[in-house]
Image 1 (cartoon, helix red, strand yellow):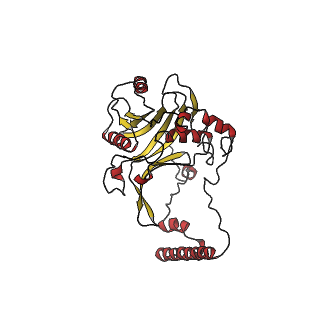
Image 2: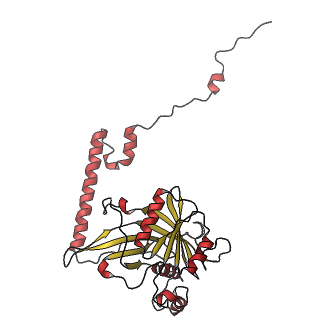
Image 3: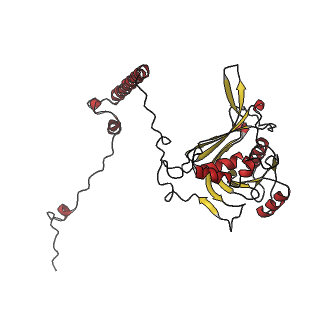
Amino acid sequence: MVRRKKNSDSSDEDERPVRRKQTKKTEDEETSSTVPSGSLQIRNKMVRQLMYAKLKRTKSKTKLKERKARQQSDAPREEPKTIEKKRKRDETWVDENDQETLDDISNDELSSYFTRQADGREPKLLLTSQEGFPTSFTNKFLKELARILPNTTYFQRRHHPIKRIIKKMNKLDYTDLLVVNEDHGKPCTLYVSHLPEGPTMKFRLTSARLSKQLRSNRGKSCAKLTVRPEIILNNFNTRIGIRVGRLLAALFPHDPQYKGRHLITFHNQRDFIFFRHHMYLFKNEKKVALQELGPRFTLKLKSIQRGTFDAVYGEYEWIHKPKHKMDTERTKFFL
């Protein structure tokens, strides 16, 4: 039996695909993508980087000269294009002379406070946490919040249900209930319920900082507020925003004591409510400064419920739904 030898000139090797080596980009090629086209002819990398830096300096100088020329000229300045300026006013935007909104405000649950029909009684608040024992940071935050809110009592809830607490509060003539929940050892949710008829609002609470953590206090904790502070509410322009602002204002008594120099601000910007506590510092007859005393935190409205707190059978006026349903445009806000 004769064996056939393989032909060395067979076409098997020719049919095999040729593998090409994948070459990586060199550093010169990577930097050349960021360098302008005028300096691509310079092959030295260091010289090319120096030329690019020089080009950036000349551009910044020309921009500075143009800015100074605009400031010295009498031409009207262009307004900065911000998201707040591009805000779309929908049907919920409230004008000053809107009679329908004024009628609703005069007949809501908070009208007795603003018309002073409560026989001279000041707001009386109860502040508590979620069930169980709060962490150290949340406990300190609640104690500081109780110091700056007038007529506020901090109650350690432990395992008492909310409905039983509300019944006891109605007997003791409390006007508002504040509940702070936590997640991963930090405050995350704030419930504000006005007694006895509501409403109840749920806020997402973020960026909570104690007074010791603020640079202006230099490690000092906030003392108990013994005067009635001045309250400022900014940019609550829609019907929902006015309702939220009225509930926040009802937490504080009337007739602020301006001699105490304390100021509490609720500033609404893009539906985020920033809480700040300041004190006026009079340097002389013309100059006034503000010192932040703390604590500070940020709120965002999640829902408005009619009546007092009821997680099972509560009737909701407004609920913030997920992004794909409500937050479809960057220039649309609800407060």
